[in-house]
Length: 73
Image 1 (cartoon, rainbow, N blue to C red):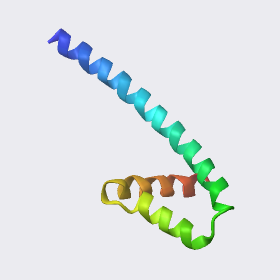
Image 2 (image 1 turned 90 degrees about the vertical axis):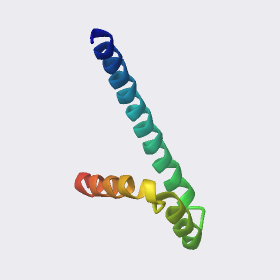
Image 3 (image 1 turned 30 degrees about the vertical axis):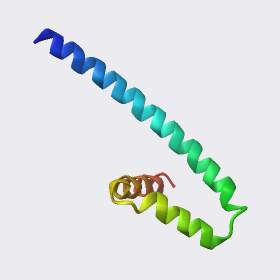
């Protein structure tokens, strides 16, 4: 049983690290998107946003992200 607990602890540490990396990439990505938005026209931006955020497995995460951003602002 002890080995299982150790493995779970390691998995949690890696998972947290992965989440932090994803968050950093996401923040960097948002910054890049904002930079690109100024260069693209609105139609392109809408298409990109739809492709990124409205795919089923990403939809919930995107919604959560938008809600947290609203709370922050």
